Image (cartoon, rainbow, N blue to C red; front, side, top):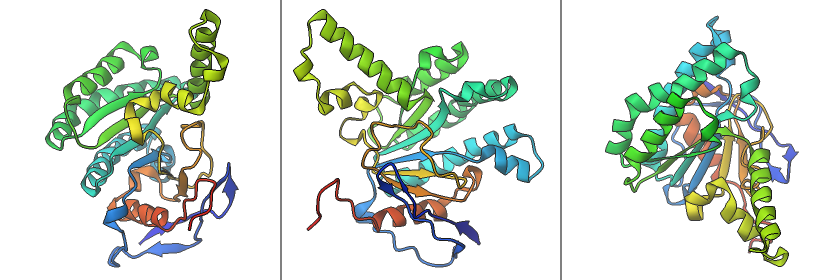
Length: 271
């Protein structure tokens, strides 16, 4: 049995449901509508450290297992027809963690892409990265750029990593760029619109899928943690008690079932 929880608390104009003590029976058939799979699924992968501590293992053991979970969930999402899977891998605030842990985390993309890129190519998955990758260690940045280059011609699901990413930093950067254009006289104040801001965000490369339909957060925490602050304005949120390394196909599909039960009105009334 796998415990599965949702919250019924309002957070930033999005509704989340928390079903206390609800257990998923892996033998029960999930009523997942394959015709209405969310196009963009974003995940805040939380709980690697707690997963390890519960097993009396060092935190890095949780991160290693979490990397294996990324591979599993990528394949599941791709098979279901998800167009974009965005994973919050490392935030601009994560540099505050112990140096040994940060060093290990910076090495994970190298190991991940070295072993997984051939499978991504085989499954027609394209790698994209949002975040300030120019600030990453040289070897980490090289691994990321190589993965994007090797998969650039793939036409299937986009596996989009948020790496050294922060929502506030992204918005600040966009505002600075727009302000510079106004100062130079190449942009008028009246031309600053929501569409302009959206097209200036790091997720613009995702085109029509840049805003997540659903954001899933594991490990029981109920907060956004500076993730895609502009893009999640009308996303649905699903909060899971499950730690990220324990995420599996059943839990992932159940989260999508929860999403499919939501009534998305985008501020209007649905007839």
